[in-house]
Length: 500
Ligand SMILES: Cc1cc2nc3c(=O)[nH]c(=O)nc-3n(C[C@H](O)[C@H](O)[C@H](O)COP(=O)(O)OP(=O)(O)OC[C@H]3O[C@@H](n4cnc5c(N)ncnc54)[C@H](O)[C@@H]3O)c2cc1C
Ligand code: SF4
Image 1: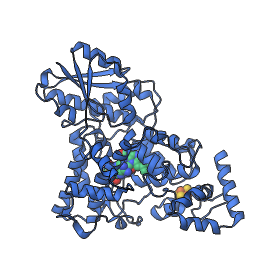
Image 2: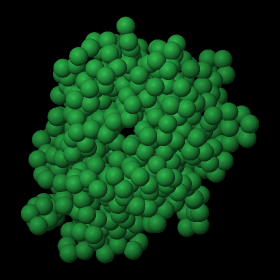
Image 3: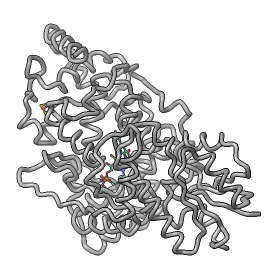
Image 4: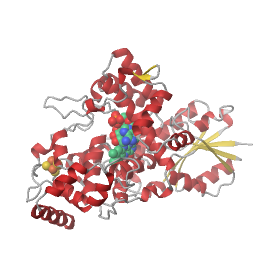
């Protein structure tokens, strides 16, 4: 029997399950990596995402070669032909790979006609297996992130003193919502110069006649495990201290704040979740960093990241098609071209996404996703855009974050109420409104902020559904008090904006 291992582009870790399952005879175990050109035509991907994935694959292939594995690296039109050719050439009888994290990709592979058996190895990249997550959900009526997170803290013994949380509290989120002060001076992110391999990938991508999004250069992301570890070290030394306090804050010209920028590396397998969590916990004990920052970062990974993956695997296949509000509007054109908007929150964020493929969580949730939600954009259209535009986007993380959290299209499986907000929130948490052509305190009129008229229009369009949730009563009471003439003006301004 000859076993061959196929390494997917987001499974680039030497401890990944398929490699671990067969370490006996490296020189005689064929390994294949495939850059598939048809696959990257499926949507207009951010050019830097393509560079990141292909360059990281090429680097990892070199690393495995240097460890003695027999590696084939293919650039091919389609996966199936490349695989069958390699299977035949190497007389492979069993193809092994880690089960893909993305469900559509798993289905695609299951439909391949391959000339050998295929064996999926359960992934070891998430801390909870699908069966464990299912067992946890079966034991409760409501799926609350907070309950899941506490379970994770106990299970992996993170920030615990015996069976109690360190600091006497599980969650310090209330301390993590500080608005930006004038004097804030966030640290500079750690970036890298493209090496020869990355420069070659950039040339290759430029030569393909495919539809893409965003700028390809300057490309500054890390592409190896060693660089990803440097980014983690940089975060621990420079950002972790203040990560919590200004986690939700936004400032013009500062797009990374104290965030870690590790999602691209975690999602490719260049970092593992447990090593990040452990190193943050260690920094807490060694350097006495504030608990709200340490706990805040750990909750993102041990809580949110694992939870989103668990929910994604648990839901039926039609989860990505959900549309609780029945929103059907097209995505505004400026999402694809930031120069087409003059809104001083959306414009710089969209610009930075074009330039880097990155925006931090609150920019994604409370600006980019919130605007699409209150305008009434189809959840699938905004999901497609996020998937194209972001450096760290994969189906497993995109679908629950956009469809569930951002658009509330699942009707409340993931969040207990929609993340919808007017300019009031944006003005409190950022300095964007200060230099905007629109007035954050006006709901109607030529200079009224679009977040305002769309927010109230959204509430009035969906008041019956929102009332049933029971958590929006305060704002719905304000809507009820609103003068009818003003509400009509709001609705008409929202409609005119959509038509324009
Ligand atoms: C609408 C929307 C779209 C998103 N799209 C993506 C995406 O395509 N890819 C992606 O990895 N994350 C996505 N997220 C989650 C989160 O915004 C990003 O993980 C985070 O902004 C990445 O930047 P960072 O590494 O600097 O994160 P930090 O703020 O430093 O957080 C540390 C890590 O925690 C994890 N994390 C935090 N929140 C989440 C979450 N909600 N879901 C999963 N992991 C989380 C990430 O691995 C992140 O790297 C999305 C969130 C929203 C609301
Ligand atoms: S006024 Fe409105 S459009 Fe302008 S920055 Fe503030 S929220 Fe954005």
